[in-house]
Image 1 (cartoon, helix red, strand yellow):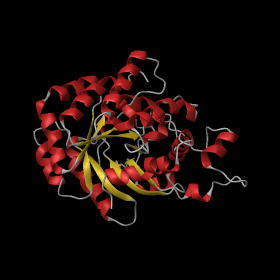
Image 2 (cartoon, helix red, strand yellow):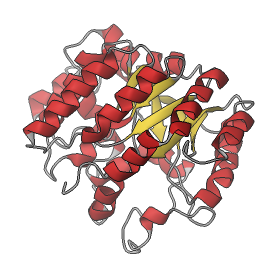
Image 3 (cartoon, one colour):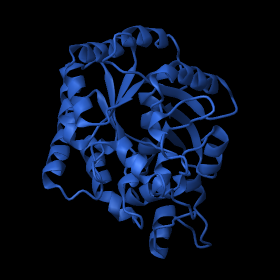
Image 4 (cartoon, rainbow, N blue to C red):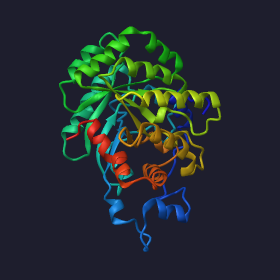
Length: 337
């Protein structure tokens, strides 16, 4: 990745190479497949493994006939530049026992943010899909953010807000704007959360925000966005130190997601293991949760491959740990019914 601080820039560069899927374990050897699935002698996954429920805390959907996604512009021929609807999500997650999802905003044009919110609230109300809550788009540096937050705090399906900080310059502007901290604090008063999606070199900003807003619940998206291919020792040191400082605050949880998008084409689960285990060990079993990041994850892996790779990485951890990671922590954090 030429610029690991700019997730959207990386996605735009990678849009032409959406991965296929070969269930169950495209990237694992025979022995690894057996270990990862708890396969029985017939080679089929163990029944108990199948029954482990999954809450996907980062479900993207977009209907380009109704919503404008500026970051997709200029990628007309890309396989990801199309509609991704609930029916497509069902196909992508078939057989994985995804029991609930939390929608994650998709960086629509600011003029479409209200339309996006109405779209996902309607999905949450319906009984024909697993969406149980939503994190919608909103910029805490804007004058109308407080009004918007108060409005949506009255809706039980809206769990929080996110604004993707695409660059160090954007993160710095947020940090220098005093209204941002006040609005973060307001979210805590309203019982809402905020997802922090920024590059590894900008994580010290996140540390400061989390410390200043102890009553607000934050989420660290995508394990702090350190590329698994990064060889920058200074960058990794900033990332590791920031993880420790963030984990030292009780009001933040780490989302285990987004990792696979930064891997090389012919990745293996062990390529992802170092960053993932660092997050799991630093935050602990009660403050980590699984997220699919579909369809963005398809830049390098289908949903099934990502789930199976993560199961392989945590195969030696306790059953209690796995259940918290894939289900229980999300249920509690988002107060899902």
